[in-house]
Length: 293
Image (cartoon, rainbow, N blue to C red; front, side, top):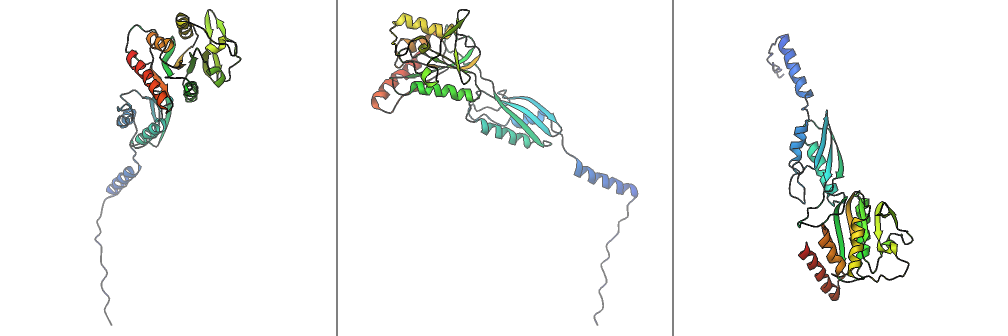
């Protein structure tokens, strides 16, 4: 019969009651301690989130505003340069991810909005339109390429994105905007010597077509055209607009040329079709905008 092996005896380390309490409190602190989130910590994390188009961080661009921290809950405003930004969702997700990685943060509420800034005029002496931050000119080298359709779609898309938008149909010889926006029977009205634009889906609309009988041609020479364009721009109660989209006549004649000479244009869209003849004409329109700024 094999004799039983002696059991291993573990050493017993004695400790005082005070030591046991200190060990227990230390363990409790390690398990229960949570770092506190701070506004500075949130801003520090967001200073590493870059605007993909501007190449700078969101904090230095003042795109992060109204940061509040309550316990582990963080809320802030993400202020974009335009409500129509195609990177809006991407940037919002990047902000949420960066904030949630901050120690002590358990939730984040990112309110995405926009603060549209007026474009800087590279030339002096041009008269801005009162209340209008940016003018977008839509032009073409020749007619029939879809310029007015593009103008209407750009205005509607900006409006749906949350921007304050107006559209001026300056295509004197073929105004199409009233038809596209279902305003064919609108009667032009005024107030205190100013033209009141029509409204369509929240967009302010003015067209030379409002002044004409159906199928009536416009037989105006250069000075009359310039006077009408100036009245439409500066004699209309546009109110506060982020964007005024201007549907220009085709070509590089008096109206497109005068527009870019008399008022600052933030950007231009030149519409064409893929035919060789259309491309030849559209190059002339692009060069006009490049030369006159």
